[in-house]
Length: 167
Image 1 (cartoon, rainbow, N blue to C red):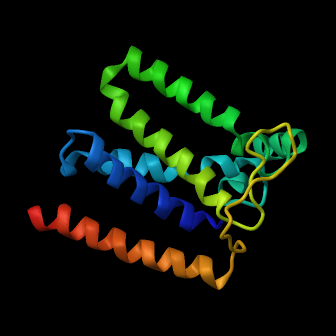
Image 2: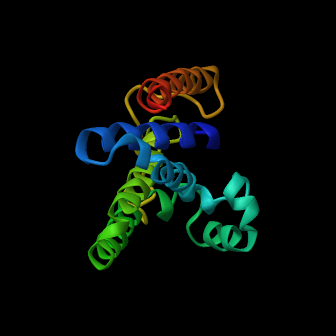
């Protein structure tokens, strides 16, 4: 999946879950929503061809050479690592809980979104078997652009109705 769609889906997922599971008012979730968008790009640090990978080229090349694209950073182990780090940070600094929640949701949304593609993910890395959704689409296809368009519209309506109308 393309980076801008990961960011849209990560932001959308966070805003929806924050509304359901937290007591944070919508005016205070803008910064964590940005963190969710950033975290949704992080798994693709494993390829020097991604936006984040190009900006962190030495790290990206190293990870790519060790685990390949959609390897460790797209695995269950990586999700557990992110969950553990977020849990520890939330315990040590309770004020960071909402940001940690946003980061975890953004990161996880990336894994889910790539599971929807034809390429799939090596969820149980280092086992190379890739898993994908029964209904999948190619990265960069018209279907992906349509999904991005729909998420853009939904996100714009959500922001307008829940945040901008209150000012």
